[in-house]
Image (tube, helix red, strand yellow):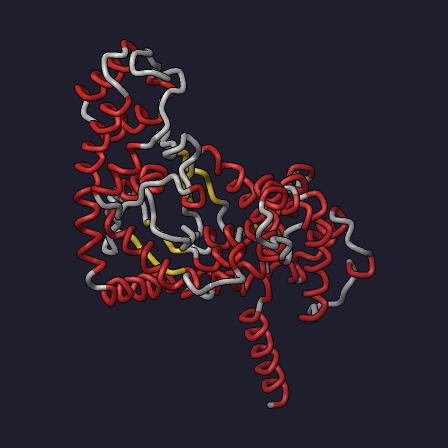
Length: 421
């Protein structure tokens, strides 16, 4: 989450509750982070609150039940590999993909107090993709718990990863350049419409020539995609066997999670920017004061008017915090005008206070020791970076091939030394 302030109950039911459930499932390795770089995409002009807000969010994470022993919880900017992968992914991401993102266009139209015409804001989905896939492992499913409104973001991430893999996952095996496979290699290059001047070479094939052939083959196949190429020539299994396909990054999958409806105090979506939220650190007095002015069913203009609890934000909150008997009392009392909205709000506030009390108590304990919170951020960031480094080692090799080049140089040097002897 972006460090823009303390978290509220909407964050808890929209994400944190599910995160805690997943961390307690041994079949998942969970990574949760504070997205301080993402905060700069829109709030780059004033970063004075980012550090403190990051501590506040970490405190809320811990108070809500995230456990550093069960999850890796870290600060985005302490894992610089995120930025490196973002850079590499941005090299292959078409500009049009980013310009068509609905939330990007909506923000440009609606946000008037900030200049969002920056690459940082436009490239937000690319950084988001890097944040996700940098923790991918070869052959292991990578899932992202999201609500239905975020599925399109994951789909874009999948497209970016697919395009990245398309450029760097294909390679010709070493045996393809051996004299015994000369006929098969020539057929492969002919199928791919590689220029004829690169289809004829002398053996042993020089390293430079091999690189040119592989590059030309990859460029040609990328145009229609490897899957289409392989399907077209599937009867030539011995020819296709010269190609190695090894995805560099795993495509993320959306794990759809059902999140309850939790409107803000004014009936709109709960948001800190709207000032209609109850934070996880709210005092009892503030909870009562804020919920007392919550909007209700607009049909209940007078105390004697019956209402419809299904359209009332207060009843939505009852469903989250109140026991079944209170829920029944609220619904029946609303429909029959047996109770007033003030009574209904007060009962809901009582149950909200009971629910939030243990979270708030844990938060107070961490607030007393901010040094401990920072230590947990640092420790989690170090653990996250260990995994990120593994991914970037694989990615760098796929993109640049430095280890392969070093091996080739060393081999050539050894061969030259042997011929001299």
